[in-house]
Image (cartoon, rainbow, N blue to C red; front, side, top):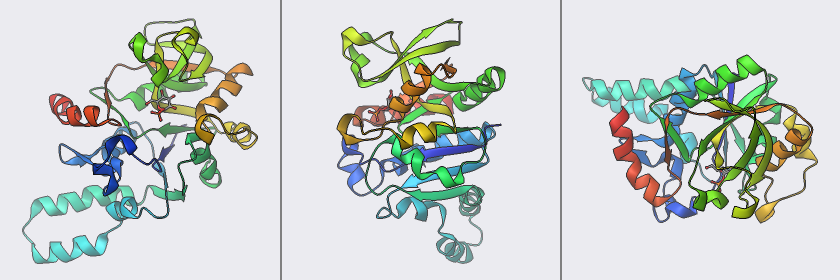
Length: 272
Ligand code: G1P
């Protein structure tokens, strides 16, 4: 059973400056709710029971967003008849019991973020989500968990992308493709156009085996001096570990760029 979700939140958010210089990009509101909460709601609906949020120590606002009871209690006391206030507090409180924080003080990569979570990981597999990648209309994590249940393998969310953008993504090579999935036999992070094995890109949802930790521990730093999860996945695929691509049904919104973020409100409002 997949019941734990890791969400790395230590990125600098450079593409969303100047907004992200004061508010962590994952807390920027999209139709009144931060994209982090959209992602956590997706997880809860898919059966996730525990979140491991990977944050830098010097960025306390994410912790404060979820753990600020005294603040809420004070205003609720003052505004006793404000129903919305009580509902908001309830919404936030529901997450408190589910969250653990671990620290990554510099953006050292998604693989490094996963390594920091080691002491909390329990089952054979866990979910990891990148908060920049919103998927609405159909629950992608739910689809992935059912593919994992069926195959017992690891699962990566994927979609076809435009050829000219291939070098912006992790790209998958595959065999045995059906309408909604395939078996992954190659993984390349941000390939040159000529080296890309397909047009199917990794989107930020992964069901990973706990054994990826031992690969990460021995992995040397990759592009940009970071420890990338994609490199560890590549090692496991080369060792014939079963990784499946889940061609998800939902609508993808790239919240990591200013353009994507600006459009996200409008796109989301169509599906709420
Ligand atoms: C990361 C991953 C990449 C994936 C992308 C999806 O890249 O490394 O494999 O395709 O997320 O958003 P980043 O967006 O951090 O450059």
